[in-house]
Length: 59
Image (cartoon, rainbow, N blue to C red; front, side):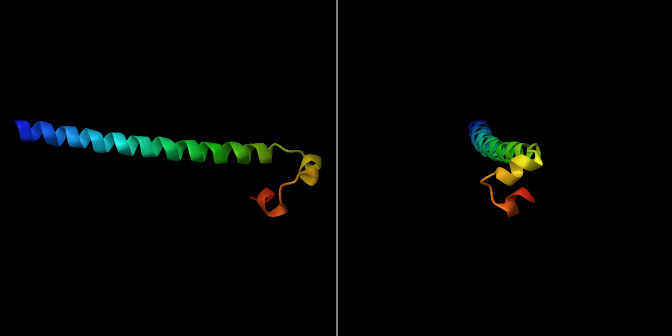
């Protein structure tokens, strides 16, 4: 019985680490998405005045 409990606890620890990693990745992807939406929302005039390089705006 003790062995079973230890295995389940180790599994919970590993799963918790995986969830935390996924949360961190989600934050990064969300940040990229927000940046893309901001760039797509720029008017042509804003794009031409922007300090952002041309290749990035084509993404």
